[in-house]
Length: 141
Image (tube, rainbow, N blue to C red; front, side, top):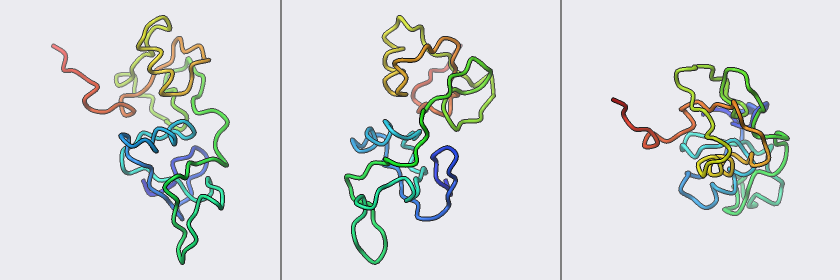
């Protein structure tokens, strides 16, 4: 991405790469920002405090930095409307939507923890397929 992934921001300057999804640091970033660890995502300096940077000629993020300011109040939009429930996602392609698992299933608990919505009633929510890794899908017959 050529701009900040924080919804409502869109800055195109002083961008910092989001850690890859397998990285422990990524899991911390995922708790506070709508990121997926694709390698192309960036967050701008506007979402970090001054002490998150190493003093240098050019601002360099510390390895321990996590976005902590100017973040949206909620990471998911509560919606039973057609469309992806991930905040900032505008996808409305019904054919490529996955329904949230039943709230009584183990799968729901995993999804809710990953998306940070364990307190929400997710009945009717859908997530578009672009928020899943390719290996999350099987080929149907």
